[in-house]
Each structure stands twice: as structure tokens, then as C-alpha cells.
View 1 (spheres, one colour):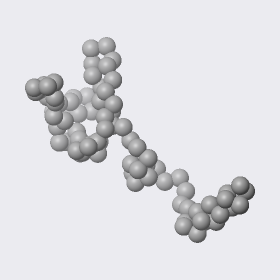
View 2 (cartoon, one colour):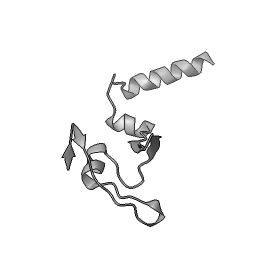
View 3 (cartoon, rainbow, N blue to C red):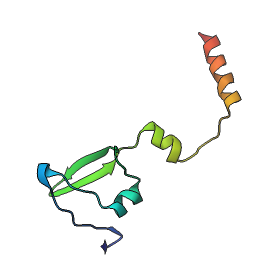
Length: 83
């Protein structure tokens, strides 16, 4: 159900204090099986935020600059020569 500017869902706490993240919310945030979430308690609220790793940022993050393989190799050789 939509409420305000975001989505709001009511979920049930199952045995072992487990909850299921609704598919619409998980799909919207790119959360799948094995995804890591950070749980934060704010007063009487629980906030879950996806934890993004380097691989996620490489695939989905903003692209600042493109570096070709040749340029990467040149930089690597240059750094190795300095040592």
C-alpha cells in the first residue's frame, strides 16, 4: 500500500523473529537472496538498508570514467616500475 512519498507494507513476524520483505520492495531496492542488510533502530522504528559491496557499485553504481584494459595495464606496469 502506498503512503506518503514512499511505499509502506505491513509484515508479520514469524518464528525466530523472521520477517519477509515484500517482493515489490525487494525488487525496487535490488534485494535478493543472499543480500546483506544493515538494521538500525531509531527510537521505536527499525530501519533496514541494503549494504552495497564493491561488486554492486562496479555493476550498478555511477560510472565516473571509463578505463580501457590497455590503459589499466600501462598504469599497472608504471606503478610496478616505481618499486
